[in-house]
Amino acid sequence: GQQVMQIPQYQHVQEGEDFTTYCNSSTTLSNIQWYKQRPGGHPVFLIQLVKSGEVKKQKRLTFQFGEAKKNSSLHITATQTTDVGTYFCAGPAGNKLTFGGGTRVLVKP
Amino acid sequence: DADVTQTPRNRITKTGKRIMLECSQTKGHDRMYWYRQDPGLGLRLIYYSFDVKDINKGEISDGYSVSRQAQAKFSLSLESAIPNQTALYFCATGRRQGVSYNEQFFGPGTRLTVL
Image 1 (cartoon, each protein chain N blue to C red):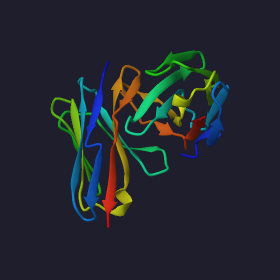
Image 2 (tube, chains in turn cyan, purple; image 1 turned 45 degrees about the vertical axis):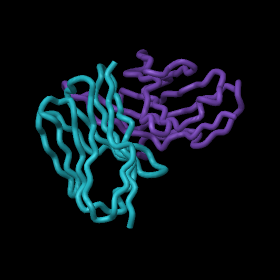
Image 3 (spheres, helix red, strand yellow; image 1 turned 30 degrees about the horizontal axis):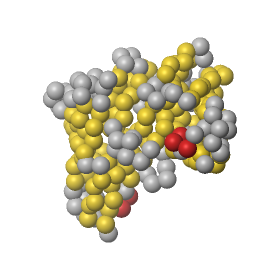
Image 4 (tube, chains in turn green, purple; image 1 turned 120 degrees about the horizontal axis):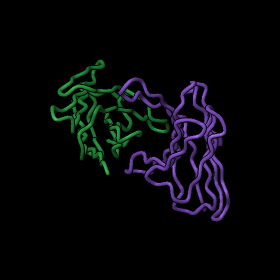
C-alpha cells in the first residue's frame, strides 16, 4: 500500500534559523496536506497543495509540492518558539488519508 | 476544534477490560475517522465511516470495533484491551468536496493506558 515518509524525524533548530522538512510518497498523489500538532494538542490542518510544482506561503512557512507530485517540503524561516510541535504531511489513498510519521521540531532559544 | 469532542480524555484500564471511546461532532460532516498515535509512527487509521450505514476498516483494525450511532456520533470499542493498545486516540471528521478531499478536523484526543 501507499507509504508516506517524512525526514527528519526530529529537527533541533536554533531560534532565528531556517529549516526544511521533507515528505515523500511511494505513489503519485492527487494532493497533499500538512498538519501541525502542538505539544499536548491535536493535529490542526495547515494547508493543501494540489498542483504539480505548487508553492504556497503562510507568513514564515513555505510549502511546496513536487513536480512529480510524489514529494513535498515545508520550509520555515526565522524559526520562533511558537513553531514548536510536530508537522505531519498526509496524502489521499482511496477514500482516506495516509499520514507520514511526522517531524518533531524543537526550538532552542 | 471544540466542534469535535471526545470522551473520556484520559482512561486507565486493565488488560481484558472492554473500553468504549466516544466521539461527537457538531460540524455536520458526513465522514468520521478514528486514528491511533504512537511516538514516531504518526497517525494510523483504525476505522472510518462515510455515513451511518457505512463502516470501513483502516490499516490497524484488529482488536477494535466501531459504531456509528448517528451522523454526529462515532464510537470506538476495545473488546478486550491489551497493553500494546496503550496510545493516544484521535477522532476526526471531514467532508469531500468535488474531486478533492478537504481537510480533517481532529478532536482533542483520548489518552488510553492499558495495564
